[in-house]
Each structure stands twice: as structure tokens, then as C-alpha cells.
Image (cartoon, rainbow, N blue to C red; front, side, top):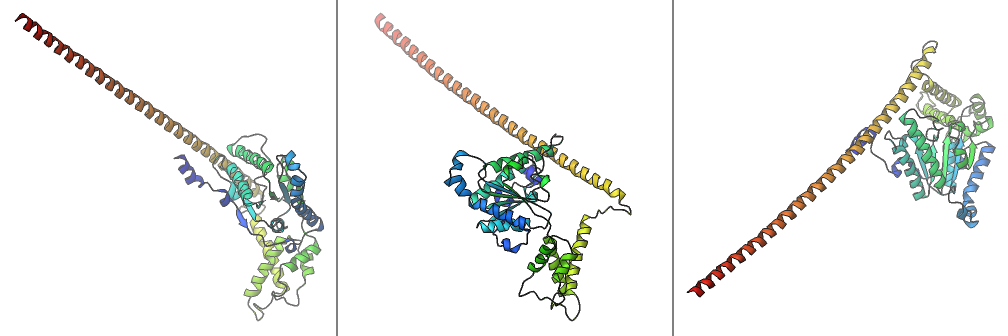
Length: 386
């Protein structure tokens, strides 16, 4: 009963395979432009994975250490700096599939279910010998609450504890991607083998990023294209440049004019990047901004407080449902115990009735035998007297 109520409110429980997105890697490190220090750190991480068998099995360290045999890497940096592509490229270099995990799929309002989901994705990765990638891991690996005041805080701490335990026992490769390294719980420091910083690209790197986003042979470019000027004008991430290129192609194929759909001009790239910047401003702007914006902070605080209150209330609801489930099981157990006792008493009554019937049968036989004996004695006496 409680399970059906839980599934109705919070959604049915997912298996490990449903909690992840499985990717057959196609992109390599050649598809991303990175600073030299970042690329060097990635090559070092790749070498660690490839030497794993030598270190732990051929050199016998696995026989001395039962935990901590896996390899966990932390990719930290602003959005759009290549963390996801590099996770795929690392899996490609290892000839393994990539299991992408996002907190939205893991999170459950049902108490204890998120922790079970975390354990399930580790089992799935171990079963498939895949690289496990936690995208936007700030949410799941965040700092634990020092003092617990709400149910969701207790649940968040439990999730981090389970994640730390799984890292100790998981034998494979795990990658965490965060926007800020300081966001994760300090306990991960000991369990993560290498922290790799993904920085915003400099002007030379941005110029190369503009170029690699286009097909060298098929993308038609006008003679006025100046990638260096674009790189100097816009200090943006690789993800932003990618979106600007796609928007530029859309603009070039839809704007009216004799050159429409024939080639991409410099103005198209500029318009594309301006659209990216404009969209970013819209996403970050509060719907409640006034002329001075003085009230927006208070409104945002109210929204955050409301979200926290809602999470707390949902946690309480989940706890109550858990209590209902326990009460239902207890009631069912008592019913089963009562039924067993009633059956035992009925059996005893039937056995007692059967014993009484046998006693009555024996008594009847004794009385009948006595009567026959008396009749025989009377007959003998009458014959003797005659």
C-alpha cells in the first residue's frame, strides 16, 4: 500500500540502468581546445588508468589494499570549458562506454531512495565496465550540513556518505565535474586521485575554438571572416563559441537577401554571439527586477526559503509515508499472528472433540460388554435353578 502511495507522489523506483545516460564515445581530445596545463593533466590521468593493472595487480598492491583501488578524477571549471567533452574523450581513449549521471535523475523525495540510486549507478558502471561521469556534481557531492535541522539535510548528508563509501569500493574510473572545486565536501579530497582545473580559454585558444567548430571542407565561409577579431572581441567559453557558430549558421540561412543560404559572413558570427550573450542576460535576470533592483534580492531570498521549506515538508511527508508503511507491516504481522493463534485453537478444539468421542466410544463398549455379561450370568443362574 505504502509503495503505491510513494510511487504515485514521488515516482516509481528506477533501476541503475534507468538512472544514467549511456554514451558510446565518439569525441576525442583532438575535438577540444585546452590550455597546455589542462591537457597535460588529462594525459597524466589517462596514464594512471592505463598503468592501473601494473600497479595494483602485477606489483601486488591490490593484495595489500582492499579499498581505494578505483580511480576518481575531479574536473573543475566554469560551464562550457570542455569538462563533458573531456570525460567522453577519456572514455574513448580507454575504449569504454560513458555512463552520464545527473542529479535530477538521482534525486528522490522518498527518504533513503536517493542513496539507493547512488549505489545503483555504481553497480551499473561496475557491471558494464564503464566510465562513470557525474555531471554537475556540485549538487550531489556538496559539503555536508554540520547541524541537522530538517529532513532534507539529513538525507543530503546520507547521500554524501553513501557516495564516499562507493568510491572506496568501486574498482573503476569515476569523473566528477563541478563548476567550483570549493563546492565539494572536503572528505572527497582523499578519495579523488587527481583534480584538473578547466580554465577559460585565452585569445589564442579562442581563435582555435572558433575554427574547430566549423567543417573545414563543407562549411561555406565568406572572405570577410576574421576569427582573430572574434577571439579578441569576445572573451567567452568554448561552449558559448559553439552556440554562437550554430546560431550564425541559422542566421545565414534564414536572413533575406541574395546571399542567403550561400555562405556565412563575419556579421553572422557577431550576431550569433550577441544572441548568446543576450540569452544569458535574460536567464540571469530576475522577473521581479524593478528600476533599482532593490526588491529582487528579497524576492529571491523568499523563493529560496520557500524551496527549502517545501523540501523540508516533502521530507516530512516521506517520513510519514515511511511510518505508514511500517504501521501497515506491523498490522499485517499482527493479523497473521492472530490468524495463526485462531487456527491453533481451532485445531486444539477439534483434537479435544475427537478425544472425547473416542472416550465415549470406549465407555459405550464397556457398558455394552457389562450388560452382556450380566445377562449371561442371569441366564446361567436361571438354568441352574431350573
